[in-house]
Each structure stands twice: as structure tokens, then as C-alpha cells.
Image (tube, rainbow, N blue to C red):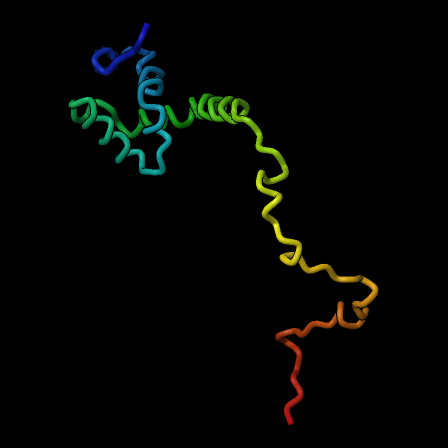
Length: 125
């Protein structure tokens, strides 16, 4: 059975126990927006055309009890995406002069461990 906005309004008016699950199914993206619960409830009420029907507590309930369904949906979409190859497609356009190669034998060991601390006293002349 498809849930639409009219059915959701009826469920909330009759205080049906499945009303919050229907709210989650219909407004899944809106419920997990990075807004306050009261603001999300107001947005949904405006979309439904019924002020005061959805409360901040309904949004809180949906966020808490249906968060696993949200992450499960995201996980499924990530699995469906194709992985990109490790090598870029246009490797023939790479110029060899773009890379600088250093010989590890040429690096002095003292230069590797030389650092200055901001707490060290500096010699003032």
C-alpha cells in the first residue's frame, strides 16, 4: 500500500500506532536534515498544509528509531556504485618532468633530523 500525504494526515488524526513509520517513509530526507526538530516539524506541516499536526517529538522519535534504516539505505547505495580504477584514464598526458626524484644516499642524515622548536631560546647577537 502506497502512503501518500492524505493517508498520513488521517493516521496522525486517528493517532494510529504506525503513523510515525509512515511519516518516516514519506519524509525520509527531511527528517534527517541538519535542522532543529521544531523547524523540520514546521516544514513538514507546511508541506502537508496542516499546522500543528507533526510535532518535534515525532521528528525526534523518527530520528532515533529509524536511524538504522537510514544508514542501511546509504550502505546499499554505496555498494551499488561502481568503483573507479586506481590508475587515471589519461596517463599518456603525464609529463616525466613533473615528478622530482631524490636519491636517498644524497640526503645527509643530520639534515633529516634538524628542526627548530618555537620554545627554544634563539641566539641573539
